[in-house]
Image (cartoon, rainbow, N blue to C red):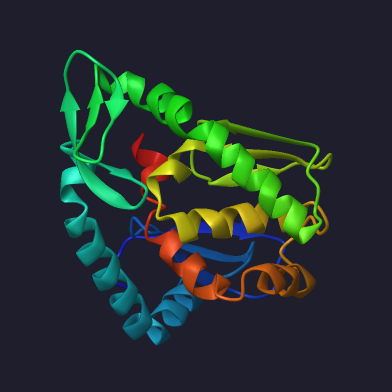
Amino acid sequence: MKYKYDIIRSQRNSMSVSISGENRITVRCSWSMPAEKIEKFLDAKAEWIDRIIMRNAKRLAANDDVIEFRKIYFDGEQLPLVVGDCNKVTSEAVYVKSFDDIEKLYIDTCSAEFTGAVYKAAEVAKLYPNSVSVKKYRGRWGCCDAKNNLVFNYLLFMLPPPVRHYVIIHELCHTLCHNHSPAFWKLVSDYEPDYKNLKKQLTAFDFLTSLY
Ligand SMILES: [Zn+2]
């Protein structure tokens, strides 16, 4: 195959390939899978791989200003990121004293309202978390532990509200079902019928979780 890829071997029989939002290709297969078989498998999927790689490349280009820290997402909009003498978010721009202040600014600005939205959604769905908190997370949007403590990535405040709502529903559903089984996705669809589309939209923002 013309692209580089990582191989994760484990005790499994099937082989699969995934492509991250940043175009990292990962093949998952058994311990004994020969390299030629992996290549053959990827060749058979070449058209699909090309399509995803191209789509991601286009999206990454559209986010050039964000990746270079000239702009920053807030509520799904790209705003100018201005380094100055204060930390604040306005409808025109995001102002920070230094890039290190982004996390604190977003958490101070949004987390109270966000936590309120989580509890409201919990009330509607009758899925009750033990606690809700917001913090910096690398590589993921949220997490529900075995005791139903929910932790959300503050980078969610950068996303369009419907996509953020999907993550809230996703984690709330984990309080009842701690895996990604068909029963779990059925539960998600009960509370967010458009989840497949929103899940896809979320993937387009995955690059943010390794940018900050
Ligand atoms: Zn999950």
